[in-house]
Image (spheres, rainbow, N blue to C red):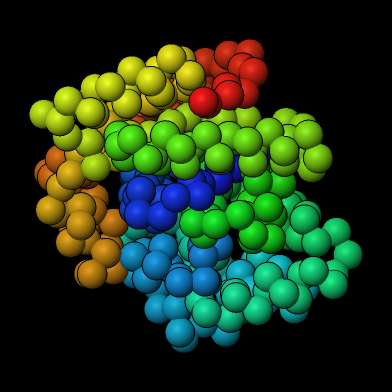
Length: 266
């Protein structure tokens, strides 16, 4: 059965979509079967994967409200070699419509049941807020990958997310865990970076990935070409970082450890 990870942080601008797209491409480059689910109405992960969000017959909206099955909405990323369940502005309406549907918190989990075994990894790009879409992602996934910048206010955002994860774990998904914390836009020359990294290690231990994603121009440019950075410039520092992250995630899955208690950030 495939590993399902939500890429989530309630703070915006921390690299969620960048991580989702480039981790999907990097896992696919290691011959893993990968699905990226765009659960953000902005559709940035869809466009960043080279899929036109405005020309789709079916999107994740249609899946969530029961108009079609996942299989009918899947598209292939032309340069990323993974599958995409696309999103566009229609998804905004799903938040309201799902409130009146049965099992509203489990719409995504139910929809994935028919295709989960077809993939090794399913990555969900979450919106930067706690809404019914994010709740569906957390109810459907095995673990949460938290991208974050090493800045003071980022710690507050992670603390809020940990509280949310604990709430979802207790109410909807008892197997939910923090899969890992990824430091993005990393600048080792900044003294605050070291302080925040130390704080993260104190709270999350080995859940903090050894891989750090640096600030990188090529990584920032790639989405405007509708490509993961691995297809845009595979020799860039950004591409190498996400390849390293994919390797780290694969190794963790090959050597499973007991599920840790959810950390409580202060």
